[in-house]
Amino acid sequence: MTAQPAHDHLVTDRSLLSTKAYGTGRHLAARQSLYRWQTPSHDLPGIVVDELTGVRGAVADVGCGNGQFVARLREDCPNLFVLPMDVSHGILGAIPGAVVTDVQQLPIADGVLSAVLALHMLYHVEDQSQAVRELGRVLAPGGIAIVSTNSQADKRELEQLWRRAAGDVLGIQEGPARVQLSARFTLEDAPAILGTVFGEIRTIPLSGVIEVTDADPVVAHLASYEAWADRMGVPFRETIERARERVNETIRAEGAFRVTCLGGILVCRGTRR
Ligand SMILES: C[S@@+](CC[C@H](N)C(=O)[O-])C[C@H]1O[C@@H](n2cnc3c(N)ncnc32)[C@H](O)[C@@H]1O
Image 1: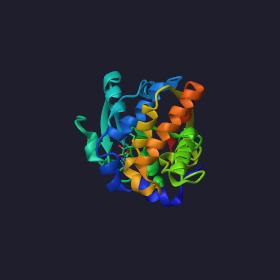
Image 2: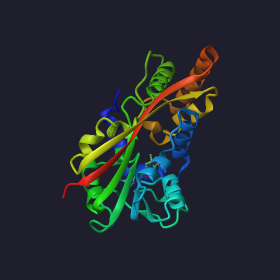
Image 3: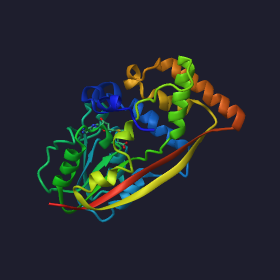
């Protein structure tokens, strides 16, 4: 199941990203919090810290969102100067030293960074090739880019839940797919796109199962797509409430509602110049 092409421009619409989607960290936090119920749990900031062991100098976290990676790097890597960057002013809140900028045109000189992060953000970027060129351009020789995204198989159960709940609301078997953010830059597509700039790409796959016995975290995750509510082709709130009922039915019948997750971190080196 992939995103409908009609949704594509919505996922990259900068005015929507910097207001309804990421004008604050509320929706991102709702999506991040679902992983509290995942087994095994993956410490993503910890993995990034490990990959940066021994690296000194400056690292930019581009599309840093609410800054969970920035905070961890500042805590665990005192040898690094961390530069938080995001296109959405509001989500940067009080992150010290943050800069509002677009990854497609970084205000950074050539070859000055030891590392650059682009975590769960390239699917929002209109010209991904240009963004990847920028990641390569700002890296010093031997520099490292760390990118993350989700597989096309990630959280299939949520997509199915949405379509069935939407179908219930519309009185048909399955309603339209919801906007799918990572479909524009999946774990499967990423190596080819990154490979135009980086000669060496190592993928760290991160799989797990989310299991909830209360519908609230799943409902909060679905509701975090509110920015795209009027483009889903179905009444948004009504579909969410119908999804809640379906999750509760599954919990009553099976003891839990399960969601299989597959994401990954791509560690890129060897910038082609
Ligand atoms: C899903 S959040 C990921 C946040 C953070 N990297 C993380 O993994 O927790 C995507 C972030 O990318 C930002 N973003 C989207 N398009 C961007 C662009 N063209 N340049 C810089 N940041 C962008 C959004 O504002 C949002 O904060």
